[in-house]
Image (cartoon, rainbow, N blue to C red; front, side, top):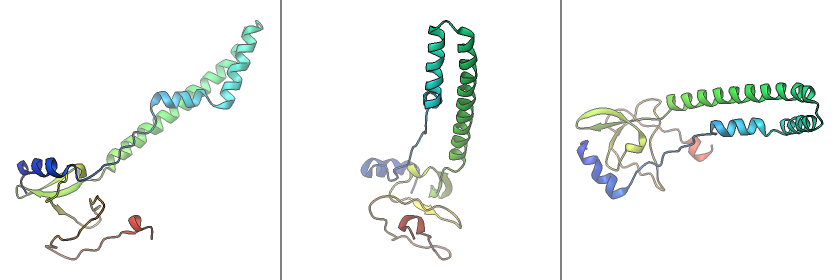
Length: 153
């Protein structure tokens, strides 16, 4: 298959791979969750009552550690989110296809019906759909596929 002929099957058959996309929690959601924790809400309420009673120093003594706790919690969660996004990028699957007579690595979402996929030892097999047929030709070696993640064995 050539690179220029990839567009036709993609138009005819649609995308052959439905990739998963899970962006996770937004930074605003992380701050909201840290702020709306039950203990934080109670301490915010206590601070508001203290301010209403005119005890601003006591309110500050209650609110400042609470705000520091929210900032630290949100910062740690945001850092963890960033690291998980980096890991997701590093572990993103790719497929090796032969197009224009050359092997190239592409995103599995770019695979179309008729692509010649090269599968090596330890590679993830890019397969999608209701039925996956194995009518391809094994050019070199033997093929064994561990389907335990699919079948639940």
